[in-house]
View 1 (cartoon, rainbow, N blue to C red):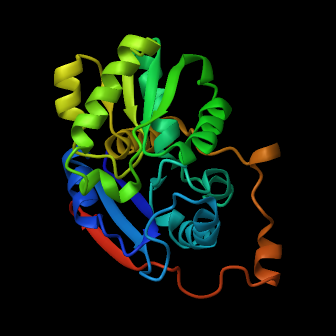
View 2 (tube, rainbow, N blue to C red):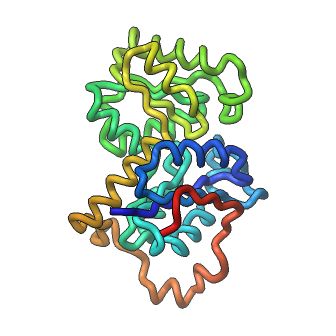
Length: 262
């Protein structure tokens, strides 16, 4: 059963667009079509600061509002799971997936405990809060920083060794049975780490895609669509129309098609 997935990169300029599209190409099922979109280049090109995240949140909401009927699942990129609750509120019958929630859910099936390797200590309070809210705090052995900014992962020649050393320490000192690379720009390291450390090492982008594929399939097969009761209720359509909340085109700066269009 073919399905269409929208991957939204929540940063401006999509400077890692080709690399992320390549990861999605390698990870997707043969019958999955993925559309990668990024924000216009005048938006922040990373979201390490919460003020940057707040600035792009309206853009993500407008994209999901405009595009949700065209897709079977949507991924909100960025390991902060940017605007996940807000996007789910307006996604209609389309499930919305975040990389953090996807990776911790998958890791909880593969191991009794896991550690999340993040870039900087700045990230930890927000990401830790997310893991707690998802219900996986007790299974998280640790969340530790490698002291690298987002763009350092692919500019610092020591990045791979630092991640490997930190991962080893998480296993030996913290008792982690699996590792999660806690940034969508933290790609290209998992295979070597997994071979060396002999534990599952999850990257954010492929994990989010596999989770999105599962949710899309479950919606089609079993009718497991997003709830619209109580805290999951959507805003009234009459208010949206009266206030002209979503007039105009969605703020998409770049689009890459992955797979055959259906």
